[in-house]
Length: 220
Image (cartoon, rainbow, N blue to C red; front, side):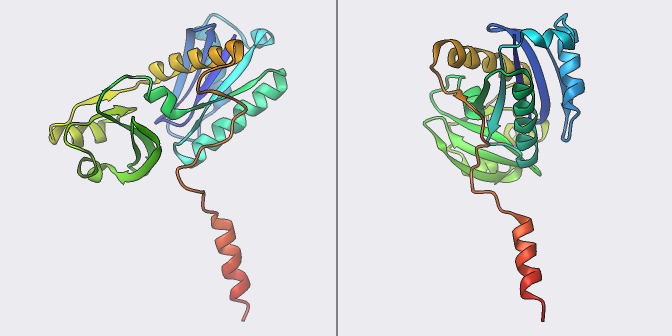
């Protein structure tokens, strides 16, 4: 059994699989989400119970890039579950889920929160930019297909500009996660990694440090 967790897209989704087959999944829009309840629901839909986690072989989680808080929350939950069950923790980069769709001229988009999107070419998946949904059409080449968990707002903007989109659904992403986890755990290859650390497009800024600096400098 493998549990797969994706909190990097619009929905927070947990799936349960056997080998490379997704048996059941459950999701909740937005963040925060009650991941314990989602896991119990996914198990139920797979015809299992929480006690069946005794047969768990691995826990996989999307490491980003994505919405800062939800990615970190999903990773923390996955780490706790893997540690409690003494099974491997596998990190899956979001681009591996989106980039699995072969398009000759395509751009990958991933939600960054607040109607903003991370944008990268399929040919250079490490070079992400940040753009608002209303600006996205302006930063893309005219022949690029937009691939990713495209929501209604972004789809409307792009379609009005004559763009072609390919939406990666929550189900698509979980199925791909299972395949990549099996490759890593049982064959030792693929883009997934043993261990899971959040992937950032830019180094995270720490509001606490900025606040502390202000307080220290304003004593007088």
